[in-house]
Length: 240
Image (spheres, helix red, strand yellow):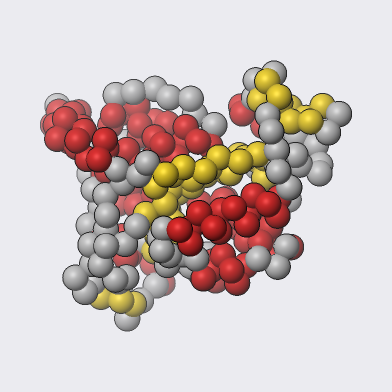
C-alpha cells in the first residue's frame, strides 16, 4: 500500500511545447509554476518543426534561431534547461509535479531527454511524484456530462475564460488555477500519483493509497482568493 507524502507538500505545474506529437519529437519550450514562482525556457531543436506544430504553437526555426510568433526568443541548450528545471524543483523541496496529459505525452518525452543527458537520477531525487490532471479531472467531473477534457475546454467551461493555449507558460498558469477549482482530495491525488518508473503501468493496477495526515499547499493566494467565486460558477454550470 502506498503512503501519501509528508505534510505541507509543494506543487509544481509544468508543460512542454514540442516539435510535434510523435514519440521522437523534441522539446522547444519548458515552463513551470508554483504559486508566484515560475520558470520559462526555450530550446532550439536539432530536427525540424512539424508544420502542424508550428501552426498551433507559433514556433518557427530559421537559421538556427527560434522565433515565437515571428519574435526572436532567447534559447538555452537542452541540458541547461533541464538542469535549471531540476534546480527549480529542488528549491521547492521535492514537490509534486502536476500537468495535463503528462503521463502519455510530456513525461515520456522528458524521461527520454533526461536519460540522454544522464540527468534522470537527479531529476527523480528532486520530486516526490507526478500527477496527471487529465484522468484526475475525468474522475472528479465524471457525473457532469462533459464532452471534452482538453485543458483549454475545462478552463473555458469551469473558469469562464479563454487564454493563450499551447504556450507552455500560459498553459501552466491556467492549470494552476483550474486545479484550485477542481480541489482534489488527498485520496484522489494519491490514487492518480505515479513515478517516472511507473509511467507505462495502468493506473487501475496501482496499489491502494494510504493517506496519513497529508496536506497540500494550495498554489498561490491569488488562486485561493478566487476559489469561492469559481466554485460558485462551477455549481451554476452543472446544476442547470
